[in-house]
Length: 282
Image 1 (cartoon, rainbow, N blue to C red):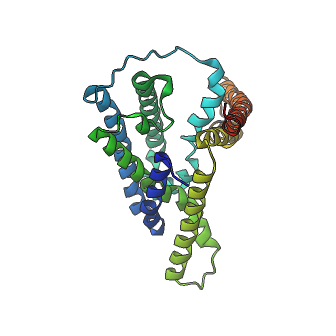
Image 2: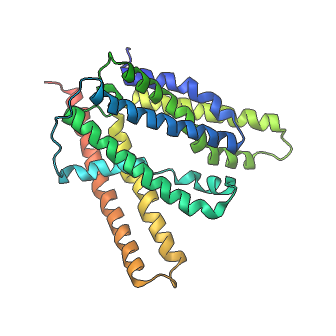
């Protein structure tokens, strides 16, 4: 069975990411995350370069608002923010943990600005026909497109190890204390490698993966990103919160529930319709 270009890029990315799973030092893993930032900047610059040097005109109109698409898109958007599992490890690894709040705030603002700018750029350059992986919509003959594709391939290497770190640390804690460091490292690396291969199999076997990500975002990420943080914040600082902050958090929790419910329904519906259309082509 032949692989599409996006699937081929996924397959190439896996062996590149595998060695990073054997790292035990969080500082080394954090150093890899700098590469992830660099890859994201490269992708952004190369997409912008298609308008400047690639002859792609930014002449597509962007509708002001598509209300019916908000539930479906919200899950996909929230999926990109569901990295809270690594926060405790980042906090413990910081030289000055007191700066964590400032670092997290700056990071979220920067990422939001980056996502928004790239979304507008893709819509303006390629219109409604833009591919879910924007680099596949870029002119294939351009050098910047090849650079963007390789940046996409290298990105998992810089992120998966950091996402896997909390699970790996818990795994090591559950291993017998008499076990040698080398054996622990081998078990950790093997488990991480197997999980990555399972993810690869899912990415290749599950069609229309962006619908699956959107569904996951609505079911899980909205809870992780909005509902639980606001609920815990209210619970922890119940007696110290001002009335305005209390109301704000309650509104956010209600908004999270709405996005989760309608997003799950919308994503499920889109996935079912796409599967039926592929099964019964006209």
